Length: 124
Image 1 (cartoon, rainbow, N blue to C red):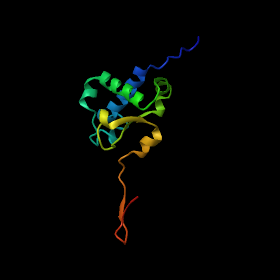
Image 2 (cartoon, helix red, strand yellow; image 1 turned 60 degrees about the vertical axis):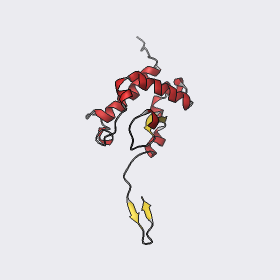
Image 3 (cartoon, rainbow, N blue to C red; image 1 turned 45 degrees about the vertical axis):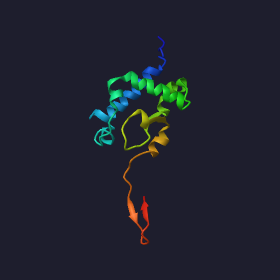
Image 4 (cartoon, rainbow, N blue to C red; image 1 turned 180 degrees about the horizontal axis):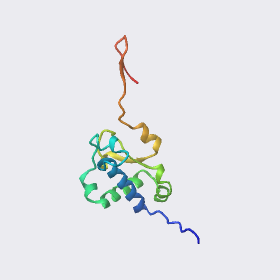
């Protein structure tokens, strides 16, 4: 018997991205809930009510960002649904697809603020 390899479709990849986003924000059992749901990060109502609204936005975003659908499907782990303002919600105006390294630098981690003897404020 040969194993049949199923080709990823754009809609199925976007469905997984959507499910992951919803899980982070609303599913207490999700491993990322502490970083999103507990911090009150929400998904806009148009995306909650209609997966196809999210898919339409995502397809337009891929085109805007000049990411081919084939590359997106074949390398889905290289494209993170990222919030431009990391303290903001998941909305069409605040989201983009980016690589994991860029996404990890775009966080709302608390920084240690130190005031030097000269009165300069330094973030570490």
